[in-house]
Image 1: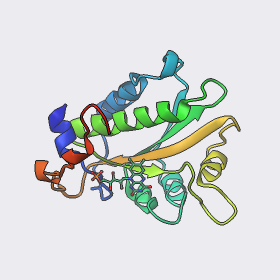
Image 2: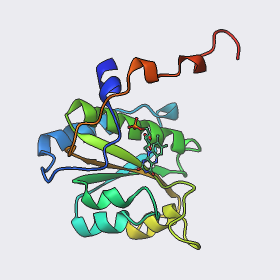
Image 3: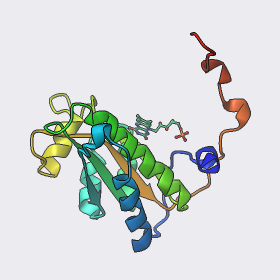
Length: 172
Ligand SMILES: Cc1cc2nc3c(=O)[nH]c(=O)nc-3n(C[C@H](O)[C@H](O)[C@H](O)COP(=O)(O)O)c2cc1C
């Protein structure tokens, strides 16, 4: 696990190589293994591979989402607010587990933040996603994870990059 954490970087450029079926199955298994508050399991996931839909998804906000148009697969992470009041936390945990599992499989990934972001002056990013995928009103779509084979290897962060001073002993 520590090697996966050391090597993971956000990847926004991908090759044309498709993610294999068995790797997609492992990714699906991983997100369903994610812990959730009170074991309620309020998260649902939309696996998007259709190029036209990826393109639409890539406009969920003006900046920081465009790479989704060129990824192989995107997972839209959804949370059911009628089941849990902390589904944002549950969604975030599922999202990072997806990213770490992707890294372990030799895949690259990047998070796209939708919650609290704007698609346009009048439409929130989450609302845009909800309309795109016909999500019911009580479902959140706080983030999207874009995945694929990395076009280039990014340098891992070094131990010197890490801000150990942020870790406090006994009191702040
Ligand atoms: C909560 C969260 C939201 C993020 N939102 C975006 C985003 O909308 N677009 C994007 O390109 N990257 C996004 N990222 C990726 C970060 O920019 C990236 O993790 C950070 O710059 C550190 O780089 P690294 O992942 O390569 O270590 C997000 C990451 C997190 C954890």
